[in-house]
Length: 265
Ligand SMILES: NC(=O)c1ccc[n+]([C@@H]2O[C@H](COP(=O)([O-])OP(=O)(O)OC[C@H]3O[C@@H](n4cnc5c(N)ncnc54)[C@H](OP(=O)(O)O)[C@@H]3O)[C@@H](O)[C@H]2O)c1
Image (cartoon, rainbow, N blue to C red):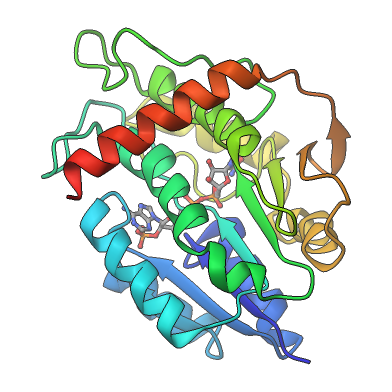
């Protein structure tokens, strides 16, 4: 039977490669991205995927998307969280959040929580959070919005640490939560940077990064046969042990719940 796979960031890179893989198998794929350009590219390259345009750094648009997906897809077999953008300088969203925090942290929590019901109705539901798990990221507890000292890498590492904590805090009898770090995949990682860094990242990517098609099989294996444990962490297809503090996870989830509720009354 055809499955329903929702992929945020499904219009480029690893998300788009997964969209192609599953539409070729006859599954129903919903790929979410923020730009019409990404949607056009998806329609050309993966015509059987459904494109939904939403800016997932917006909490309101995320809420609307969740409502729409829950109505149109009462059963969701897999939720792949892959929407990401590296911000070299601090960007604040209209709702007052640092952009990386809104997209990489709040959006992922909202999607996982908001789509709980359709996921629980699937035979073997799974959430795949594509992130930098296991890289030693830290939560900047004193300045979550990085107002005082912004660095793109600090924001990215905080997002990775947040994924680990939110994965730990997610509780479900049925839906498995998978943190997946693809490590270095050639997807256009150089694009956000200015020269000369842009050229350096492009060369490093050409030499060291894995082609995007190679990143798909280990991810597809986890979607097709989710692990038995509620939370597992993987780096480039191999399971890793990750020590995540349960108390910090609870505290962090509570913080996200509170900031979200105040922004989305
Ligand atoms: N590639 C790697 O080496 C690597 C390494 C470690 C972790 N990861 C993780 O793997 C995931 C996928 O990485 P990737 O390299 O494949 O990504 P990518 O090629 O840069 O694609 C990012 C996707 O996110 C979408 N997106 C960006 N901002 C958005 C927004 N505000 N709202 C909705 N969609 C948005 C983009 O579409 P639009 O531009 O149209 O919005 C695009 O579809 C990311 O979470 C990343 O952190 C990747």
